Each structure stands twice: as C-alpha cells, then as structure tokens.
Image (tube, rainbow, N blue to C red):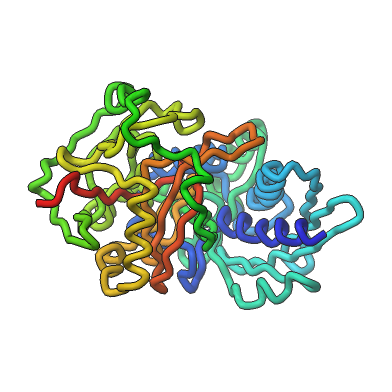
Length: 404
C-alpha cells in the first residue's frame, strides 16, 4: 500500500509535467518568444501526436487534454509493472475533469479544475496536503491557447470529424477555430527526474574501467553526428580543488542537440542540451544499449585537451563544493533547466543539469542500459546526483586533462 501511495504521488508530478507550467514558475518554464506555426505543429505531433489545428472555446468531454491524462498514468505505472486502471470523466456542471486511479482494492480520486488555460488539482485524503499548495498550472500550448481574452481547447476528433468541422464552421462565431496563427509550443516538465538526493557510489553503477581500451574505438569513430568543436582557447576555466572546470556550459553543434524550448537565443544564454550519446559523441543506439568500458579521460564532444567528467570527478567536485559553497556559483551562473525523458522542457532558472561519462546499469530490467549519471545544482544551492535516462537533455561542463 505504501509503495502504491508513493507511485500515485509520483503520478501527480507526471500529470503536471505533461500539462504545463506553474504560474509561480516552480519546476516549470515559460517560453520567451512564440515559434512559427510549422515548428509548433511539429512539436505538438512529437509530444502529443496532434496534427490538426482544431480548437473550441468550450471545454468539453472531447477536449484533447482529457485524452492525455490517463496516458501519463499508464506510462508511469508500466515502469513499475503495476496494473493500474485509470478513468477520466468530464463534469459539465462543475466544468472540470474527474480522475480515478484504481489498483486492486484501492482507488484514488482527483479533480482537475480548469480556468482558461490554467488548471488546479484537488483531492481529499492522503494526497490533499501534497497538492494544496500547488496552485494553478498552465497547460501546454499544444493543448490550450489564449487569444484576445478567450481560451481555446484543442479538440480530439477523428479525421472525418476534422474535415467536416473545418468545412462547416468557417462562418461560425469562433465556436471551433482552425487556427493558422503562430502558437507558442511552450513545453513543460515534471520536477527534475534527478530529484533524488541519494548519492549512490560508483561501485553500484556500470562504471568506467581506467586504462581499458576495449571500447576506446567506440569514441568519436562510432559517432554519426557532425560535431563542431571550438578550440580550448575559446573557453574559460576555474581551478576547483586541483581540477580545472569550464566556467560556462558547452555550446557546440551536434546533430540532434537542442536549445532550450527550441529557441536559438537560449543556446547563446545557456549552452546546448545534449542526450548522453550526443555528449559522448557516439551512436544514438547507445542511449538504449550498453557502451561498456571506456578509457579515461573520455573526450566526448569536449574540446581537445579537455574531457567529459566521469562519475568520480563529479563526486570529488560535489564533496568539495558542499564544503566550500562559494564555488557553486560557477555552476549556477546559467541555470538552463533541461528536457526530461518525455522530452518536456523544464526547470528553467531553477536547475543546472550536467552529464557525466558514466553509465548506470539497472539490474533485472529490460531497459537496464538506458541510464547514465546526471549531476545537478538547484537554485537553493542543493547538489544532487541521480541515474537518469540517457535520452534526457542536459548540459556539459568539460574539465582540462592536465593542469596548466
């Protein structure tokens, strides 16, 4: 029962991560500029499998947000091998959705009260305290948008209904709008998947083997990515406990890497976001397969003369900066957030999330090679490490191979 309670609590964060950003900017983000319609539609298809701009000013049983709620729950519970049933109902009288999660003899009810493009979760019982202070959250603009004071909810319709709706509603008074305007694809996120504060020792991970050359040929040569790396002279470094760390996030082009919220100006401000395979300069297949032993130091996409930090190097840094917190400012000077394994952007100005070169193997799991070590600095100066999905988008800080 206790395990189920923890998982259901986790569901609340999964739901929030799929639906939007906090009006208080806690753990979620706001885009600074709207994107072109083409990139917005691509993003909506990628995230929600939405291709048609069919909107309604009325929240209804057919609003697309309803169809997403249980999908988040199913994705979460599948990872725990728990058979959890989920149902969502629209209460037209109260103008909100009602969620029921059921597992054997246990069931939990939640209400999703919606106002404009914002929603608030409410419930009674053991979870009431968890969500009481959450306030209102903003839906993803793939699902809801506001124009001229009106909220438009994306309708979930079949192709036939879309075609019929598009032709029959051209003269309607905005009951259903087929929009061709720019829509901001503001992606949002759940609270950092690396929010665990437990620091697992390197012996528990699929760690590097120093001096091994068994997989050194996989580095660089196995990459299908174009990498444009600036010379080491273009970067500044700071000495911290005899290590020389880059003072800014890496910003080099790798095919498939991203700028936060798909906004190029954010690359200039925060650096670029990379998956683990991109950071390692190896084939993307290693985001789900084991790379295995590597030679240290491992360069990855870092400039010549530098390398991607290993688990041990990050651990040494964290041990030192936790005793000398004045050095944390070098890693909290950008706070560029991340995108999680659901590809939702999150935690802008709240977190700096960085890759290590070290894989993490989860035993007795079909996806046991899909993880690597991530290291994070939070806006409250808390430092955490966690085994995150390799398809997470995180930043890179390189270390010099040798002291100058």
